[in-house]
Length: 181
Length: 181
DNA sequence: CGAGGTTTTGCACACTTGTACAATCCCCGC
DNA sequence: GCGGGGATTGTACAAGTGTGCAAAACCTCG
Image 1 (cartoon, rainbow over the protein chains, first blue to last red):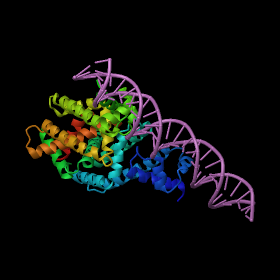
Image 2 (cartoon, helix red, strand yellow; image 1 turned 90 degrees about the horizontal axis):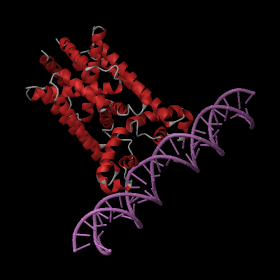
Image 3 (cartoon, rainbow over the protein chains, first blue to last red; image 1 turned 45 degrees about the vertical axis):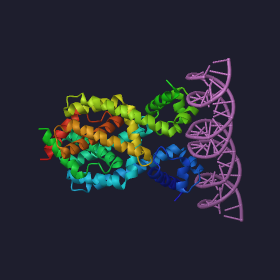
Image 4 (cartoon, each protein chain N blue to C red; image 1 turned 135 degrees about the vertical axis):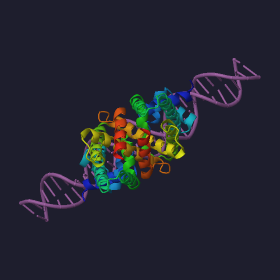
């Protein structure tokens, strides 16, 4: 493995362990087992390296989450259970995601990336939970699912003891449906 | 206004303009129009000052949001419209909120604060949307509302053009309710 | 006016950060 | 074997970081 690949791998490790904003050039070089100057040679700047590693890491994360969700039986409760399991197993990347959301107005190059990821995620969720709905219905259901996904994740990140379980969430949705009549 | 109060005010301004992790001691001193050493004298360390300013700022933000939501007619659509308006008007504090969520595993002193805020917010939402529901129903509805609130906020922060409007969200909930049967 | 304390500040210290540069190393074609 | 070019690295530098300290300013009583 060349230094370039080592640096990407080290940067991904730092994204897990330290996060986006707090990882330094020396953190990455140490994690990669490579000299500090290699960053400038291969990527020009620490920021470009981190961004590239971030895109790869989040793409892998998204792909894995997508296949995990598709592997469920499609029932809403199974989907939410899979989401909660993902938050448990991939906790660092979920926190990184929110860390980026918190920098959305200060890191313009990240903003467009987040927008793209959000739209793609919504489209996938629309296909997953929308069933055979038409375009507008799928858009609404996908957006709803995405909001619930993010909200559920944040609950499990901050306060797992008080967070809604998958069963809680389906029950709550039924309750809300009953209230609507 | 003494230096101590100026520092708190300056720190709050920095929380709006720069965020939590990226504000430096010099940023605060400059914003407060006060010497750098005043921070150490009054608060011991920059971190303690920032934490104190953060707690005050978020408490005020929460109180304002609470009264705004209570001022609605209580219909779900009006509540979501008020939330979206809050994201528009108080954007910096919403982003700070997510920034903190992204640091939840790295800033222990913040973690318990977030847990407390989350539980209080859920309780308030339960009272708001739960109507006359009993304890368990209120817990479920409050948790659902909180998840939707966070998820909706993140959509409006990242991608306002694609985000669900209040009308969209109520329509989506009705759709989901219909699907559940 | 002046002593005593509290506040305030200028400054400096040690440390971290990102990046540039020259020197060195390594590998492949000849 | 050996030259040459890309890859790698040790190091240095400027800018920025938080915090401690001694001096100065200020304010309050007597």
